[in-house]
Image 1 (cartoon, rainbow, N blue to C red):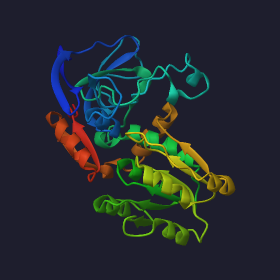
Image 2: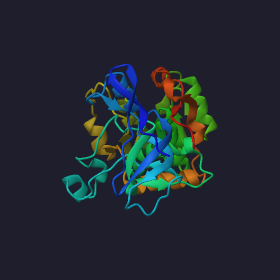
Image 3: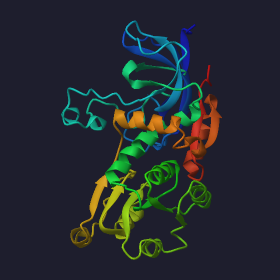
Image 4: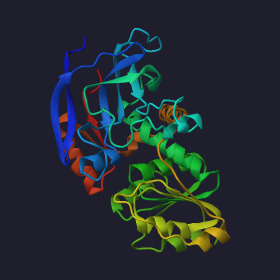
Length: 345
């Protein structure tokens, strides 16, 4: 039976989470009420929490979540009460804005961006089309990383990764490690660059071909050695760093691709070596968000065991310790922090 009220965690000011009681929303005909089991803390959630994001407060943070179907609308036929599910939090219009009409739903102008999402609450409404049923044996904590994995899959396609190619991943936080796992699955050789020792060691355990602390070793020299002097086919910068982004360009071989995957807060301009881009025919691109098809693909990879996202989770904290989770994220030495909102039913 659905309760009348629920607890939500609201970010009302920088560095402050306030727990509040609000009425449980009722689903419309094509909607589902999802009971939330687990919700990951994303870097965008943390940027809202620590005041660096332009998002307007108050907000209920959290968009990486799994749970179960608590209640269905009158027009819902594909899902049943009790189904274990993961929710695609991105709900583009698909038909009304210039981005969607050009086949870019990840850039829908009507879609909420940034740190919102409503996953740090006991219940959340979602459209039936955004809810994916999970297999009974799918780990709900692991499946909560379907959204960041979908973002990574989008970035991997931007990098044009192929079997046998040499890929450099700069940064081995949770996103960098997902890039490592995805590139290895695609058959690439992967060099991971990371100055934090515990994160670099985790990259080695997850199958990185070479791991480099760039503060101790010359990353460019290692790339040249591993590529026979050619350079990397793709470099994915998974940290918001001006130094890392500018240095990454010089790691590329002819017609290599640089993917700026992480935003920078505060934003700073990058210095571009135009001759290097011109004569080496380098492609520089960004990557953000994902399509629904990529979200479905990410869930399939998790459920088939092809990418084990549970190996990226370092902390699972109870619902009343969200602020402790934010402090762990701030330290930038751990991996993924997941909040147990209600636990599985």
